[in-house]
Length: 113
Image (cartoon, rainbow, N blue to C red):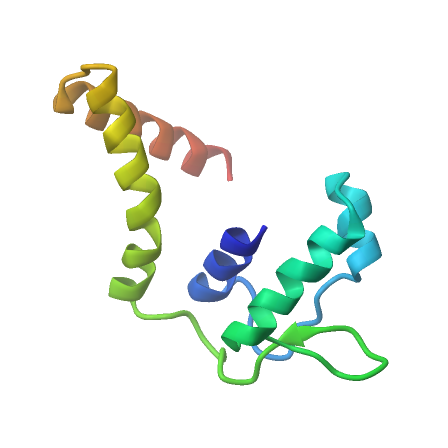
């Protein structure tokens, strides 16, 4: 959840001032304990991504007016791709096959959005 929110803010899908759903709403939607959501929100608040307002919904912090530069968004993808590359090596798959699969998934997901 934390990573997903980071990516949504980085891409500009969530912008400054946009209110976040309540802890209870998110916990119910994701079928997780409310403390899990609360901890995630607190972590994002400590990072400066979200801001808490007493008695009101949390919202995206003011400094996130627009999408982050492309280079910063690419860096957010690096850990996931590094893990995928490690798994491809463990499975002894050729790089070309892994890249072809990634491209296929990327284009397939993009077409359905």
